[in-house]
Image (cartoon, rainbow over all chains, first blue to last red; front, side, top):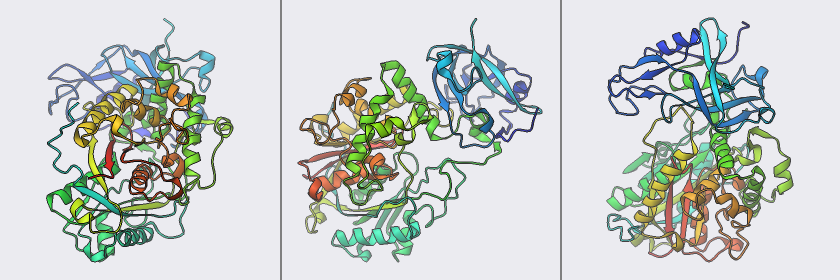
Length: 145
Length: 401
């Protein structure tokens, strides 16, 4: 693993379990202890029931979802992405809950979505990019299954 | 739709009575604060007033960069408090607007201050700066807080923000990216006629638009307004006091804003969010202003990114959902055509530079006050939008009290 210049996530008290699981290539989502709904991003207030004591538990999820939108990034404003330009970002609705959305890279055939025929509605599955020791971030790959 | 709107007690009770607009430049020779001082004094004089009569200062100081540039008052931003102090005024009322929809937000502060008697003559300004170096470049190596969910994954900055809902629009409605050439060419055509515009005398052809590569598909460089240095200033007072001043007053009939109730990832703006909250804002606008869409002679839609033109046209009901691209392709927003909607007659942000919603507001003011010169149109009721329909807002103006 070569040292990345990409910005690394800084876990905080609330998000640490998410990043610990990500380092093991496990995608988790934060479930509100009051209403049971998943939220991303997490916050001091639940986005669904508005409790200010969500006491989230992080549960493994399938990592499967549907592409709701996409773009090809050809110029990055952040360091460390030069090597992967152009790259595809997908806006994904996870299967676990309506409108539970993540935005991350699509690792297939980077930069040439026309070759994979990328369209809204296509299925994807989570994958992980290892950025540094103990630092892995979620991404997606097309799900042929 | 209620047209009585008896709850808007300030309807047409507050008016714009003077203005000044600086030259819009890539990088101005003067510091931003110095331009703001000149522009403020010009606007006050234009209104037939003196600096000591100004007792209210409002505005937004947002520096809309995703980059690491510092927000330094007087240099890269100008707050109302900075401006008052540098003009030597201890104002009865000074307030900055926080959030999106900076122009309608600031107009609302001015109207409310005057209608409540908190101030009699309010100066509203917007000062925008283009820092040296790449506007959105950010050398961050660590992403804490809300950014941890987006930046490490490569989702960052306003181009990706607008590219995602624009892709949704194109796929959902079978629209073509090429159609947007008509929007950008229209903005640049009108901006080319405006002496202070960065794009003065520099129209764009559809061929030039289409030849430009994309940066964040389907967004290319010409779909984005260009960062600039520029300041605009307006003077507001009561309709009653306005009668004694030299310029024909332009009244604020009403305004509306809004924001989604659900949280998203930073800069994640799904198309459905934009349209749903935008529709609520439009409904609030007609009610607060006491007008219907057909009463509006001069709608000015926001265009900081070109897809916002489609979104605002649909939110305001100038066409049905998914139909704006057809309206545009049929020449429906050609401000030189007798039946064209003049929604970009003031050049917008694409035709002037990144002045936020100022070009839309200024076009309403100039046309309704009869001060548009060679560009003068027949118009009584204007509408100026700013920002995205789901986080921004709009203001209705009238030349009649």
